[in-house]
Image (cartoon, rainbow, N blue to C red; front, side):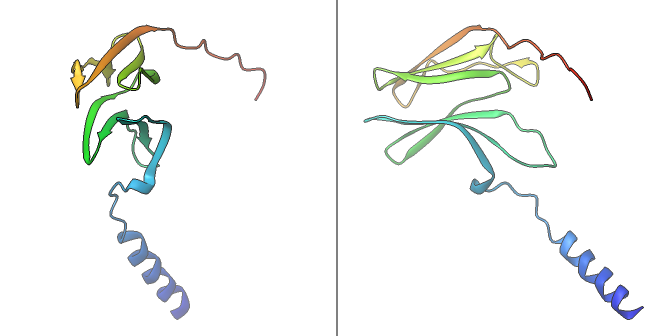
Amino acid sequence: MRIACYLFILIYFISCGQTFKLDLRDRIFFRKIKTTSIEVEWYTYSAAWANFSDVVTVKKGNILDTVCISDNIADLYVVDSNKIVIGFYGFPARYMDPIKIRQKVLESPIIIDTTYIPPPPHARYGF
């Protein structure tokens, strides 16, 4: 009985020690693009206890800036080593609310492409 009591207390203290803070290790990268002048990252956070939007950031030298946080990003690429093109399924949105994206971030123009079409759902063939 004492072993079960000690085990319960140990499990209780271990489970209460979770901070639920996001760490850089929790990122899942969809794409990293490094050019001569900028570095662009498209990622989301991985956590079993929450749902996160995708994040696009730009780094130039030691300066890091967020371009957008959205749920419907389809693609990301860089043209002419400076122009950032972000493709969206429809208009940029986060949790179904439209968002505005700046036209320039760290002297890099942002081009928004809203012509992407989401893939059709897959048919289920069994259980």
